[in-house]
Length: 253
Image: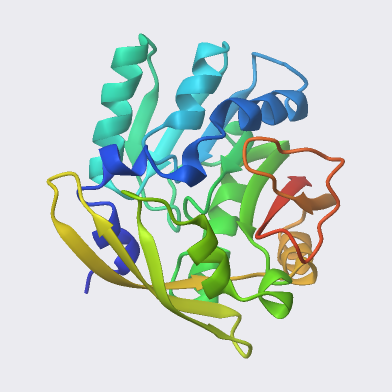
């Protein structure tokens, strides 16, 4: 049976690029460059790359990036956008739970819930972390964002989504956060690229910092830093608080 995150991206590449949560690319790439020490010889893997916004921006800045995504439609659009931008990028349709790479990259990025936290079981989400880790070289670094489990303890996820909604963009309805599993089940209503109105039942996992730390320690990371993730303005100066909807994780092997 097809999962919601597979259905969502079948015909939603152009509309996806207009969503409010994908507008911070340049600032986010500034942070990635800092974490890479501006070393253009590094090989970067963009997991859940979507339509390739980070991969394209980083390639324009002189980095060597490989982009992978489960959605063939998103990868097709990423290739079109790379061509429009005049850059060559290796974009591949791959499942983040089962990547073919081993010790090949210096840095892996997973941003804007590209893969991790969308899976239907905790084991599958952990498989994504395992595969990202396996793809890295010995001293490799992993940078990713995920939904902050502290947020729903203090705020209504439903109210947050309502406050973010803009005309012509996707709408989230019927949110119900489960304290036992830290999962939010909701209905997303959106218009696909052919103009068809669609509704999907979504199920996303929120993580608390101690869980992330434990998962990454079990995978052998020596240094794990967690910050608040500000859209388009990632920074090591932003301490994670319950006000942050997302957390930013930087882990070094």
